[in-house]
Every structure is written in structure tokens, then in C-alpha cells.
Image (cartoon, rainbow, N blue to C red; front, top):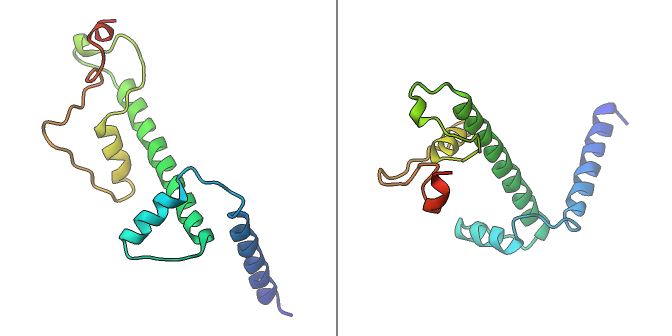
Length: 132
């Protein structure tokens, strides 16, 4: 048996083992939700392993986008502010649509929001908390 056939056999065995391990794994994204969106796109597959594989890939994508958005948020807070009155008093991390848009743009997703969209770190907070 040649080495290329052995490598191919090992790859197939690893793939089979991985797919069977998906049956024991409960992804963060529920199977029903994945099946719903797969169905809306016209994809129907009775194999639960494939549904879970899509859920794991989606979970990884969301995790990577969130991590990138966090990096953009940290970079924004670390940037020097020219107007000292606009500088936040505390250095808490607040994810903005700009942070998320920049992160998604790196993955080829262009996100645009309406002009009226509230994108201020203090928006939606209790008025007594804003002044603290």
C-alpha cells in the first residue's frame, strides 16, 4: 500500500471519527435553529451530524467575529482623544456597531445601519448611571 493511500485512509478515518463525535456534542446553537435556516435556504438533510457540523462552523464564525470586534473596541478606547471632555471616565468596554461592522468587513460582510441607529455607549442606560 502506498503512502498516499495510507494518508487518505487516515484522513477518512479521522473524518468518520469526527462526524461520529458530533452525535455526542451539543452545540451552542440549537439543532432546530440550524435546521430552520438550512431549510429556508433550500437545504434539507436528515443527517443530524451535518446539521451539527454547520452549527459548529457557525459558532466558530460568531466567536471569531466577536473576538475581532473586541479588538476593534479595545483599539478605539486606546486611541488618544483630542477633546478631553469626550473622553470616558471609566475604561469599560462597550461594543458599538462600528466595531462590529469593522470586524464583519474583514470577513467580507458589509453591515450598514440606519442613520437614526443609536450607537452611543451611553444609549439605553439608566440616566442615573450615565453620570457615574
